[in-house]
Amino acid sequence: MEEVTVNVIDLTQGDESFVKELKELGAEELKECIQCGKCASTCPMALSGLEFFIKRIIHAANLGLRDILLEDSSVWGCQSCNRCVEVCPMDVVPYEVIQAVRRAAMKVESCPANTYEGLRNLYRFGHAVFPKGFEERRKKAGLPEKPPTALSNEELLKKYREVLKQTVLEEIAPFPLD
Amino acid sequence: MKKIGFFLGCNIPFNRPDVEYSARYMLNELGVEVVELEGATCCPAYGTMPSLDIVGWAAASAWNLAIAEEKGVDTITGCGSCYGSINEAKYYMEKHPEIKQKVNEILGKVGKKYEGKATHWNFINYLHDEIGLDALKSKIKYPLNGLVVALQTGCHNLWPSRAFHHNEENVFFPKKLKEIVEAAGGSAPHYSTLTDCCGMGALRSNAPEKSLALFKKKLDVIKEELNPDVCVTGCSSCLLQFDAGQALLAEQKKINYTIPALHIVQLLAIAMGADVEKATAMASIPLNGVITKIKGGN
Image (cartoon, rainbow over all chains, first blue to last red; front, side):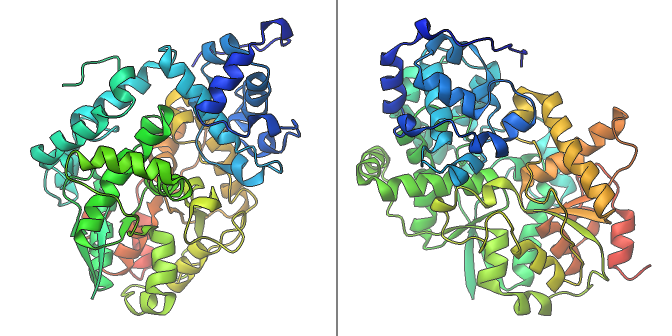
C-alpha cells in the first residue's frame, strides 16, 4: 500500500451526490457522526499508522470528497473488526461507511489488485483464499487432498457460480463470468 | 448424539489443515458427530462480496447456511472471518426482510432456500456454552499441567455484538477462552493488550509492514507481562499471524524471542490424545516444549 499524505481538506471539492451514493451503498447513518474520535481510539487502522483511518474517512465521506476517498487505498486496510460499531455513541455504524466507500470504489475499479484475485478465486473455486500446495499440506495433517467443499463437487460449484452471477458481481467483475 | 455441520472456510482447509484435523478429532472425542457441508464455499471473506453489495454478501452466506439447513444441523467454524461474515449476513437478513426475500429469489433459481434456522457457532461459544466446561474437562487425557497460556480470542469472535447469538458478558473483557484453557488444566493470566487486534487480515494483505508492527506491539507486551509457554487463539487468522507472522518477525530480526502458537482446537485435541504430528503439522514455531509439558514432562 502506498503511503498517502493527507493534507488540509479542501471544502470546495465536496460533492453532495457522493454522500447520497454512500448512504445508498449502506452508510445510512453517516450524517449522525459528531467526529468524537471514539472509533479512532480503538481502530487497528489508526493504531497501525494508516493516515486515513476511520474517523477521517467518515469526515471526508460526510463532505462528499469522492476523489480523496476513491484514490486513497486506506479503506482496503480495514480489518472489519467492528470495534468502531461497538463503541460509536451515535450508532453511525462506522464499518458500514468503510464498506460503502469500498463499494463505490469497486464500481469505478479503484481497488487493490488482490481484491480482484480474491473475487476471481471465489468465483472459480468457491474459495477466495486459495493458496497453492494445499494438497501436500492436507496430507501432512492426515486429511484427503481436497476438502469436502464446493471444490470437490463440480455440480454444486456450478450452482454456486449461478448464485454469484445473479448478484452485482455480474456487473462489476473485471473478469468473465462463465 | 450431538451433530454439527463443520464449516471449513478457506484458511483452515488450505493453509492450516492441522486445525481441521484437530477440530475433527476433538469433536469426535466430545461425542459430537461431524456432518460434512458438501458444496460449502468461502463465507464470503470481507474483502470480496461484502465489499460489493449487501444482497450479494447475504446471498453468498445464505448459500452456505442453506446447505446446513438441508441437513438439519447448526454450523461451527474455527475462523473468525467465517464467524463474523456469516453471522452479520444473518443479522442483515433478519433485520431487513426485503434482503432475505431477494436472497431467496436468487437461491431459488438453483433450487436452494434460506430460512434462518441454523445457528452459526464458533468453537469458543460452542465449547463453553453448548458442551460445557465439566463435560470438556472429563475428556482431557493429558491435563495441561499449569501451562502458561497467552489468550487471543479474535476480533470477529466478539464484535459487532448485535450480530451474535452467543457472546461474552463484557465484550471488551472476554473470559470464555480463559475458562476453557483453565478447565483443561492450563493457566491463562490477564495481560494489558488482551483484546488488541493481531493485525492479520486486510491490513496484512494491504499494508504488511504496518500489520506486523502492530502485531509486534502486542507480542512484546505478551512476552514482557506473561512470558507464556504458548499463545492460544480462537481464530485461524490470528493463528497465522501468531505463528507464521511471528516467525517472519524473528527472521527479520525484529524480535529476539519466539512463543509457540496453537488454535484452541489444537491445544484441546492434543490434551485429548490426538496425533501430535498431524495436530501441529503446519506450525512454523516449534512446539516441542509445549508438548513435553502437556505430556507430563517438566
